[in-house]
Length: 88
Image 1: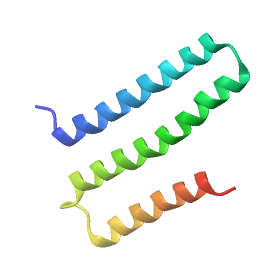
Image 2: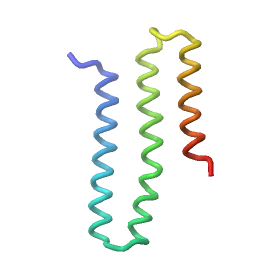
Image 3: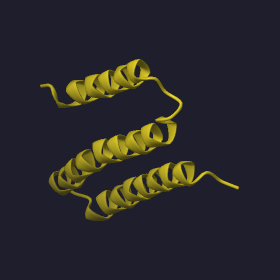
Image 4: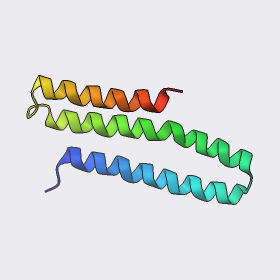
């Protein structure tokens, strides 16, 4: 039997991948740089949301197995990823 949290994480990633493929097809259909850039900008919001959601689900699933120190290190790592993404 598949773990519900793993199934949720995988489903989110499949949804995210499907959105990426659909966006690529839309870009090809539009065939204009400015419109393709708008579609790409929309994708920039989906990626971090999926990362944060799947990480949160994973941490919820492992909460009883991780000590508070390890949980803190994971949160620091995720924070560093977001700072790297958002910092100009």
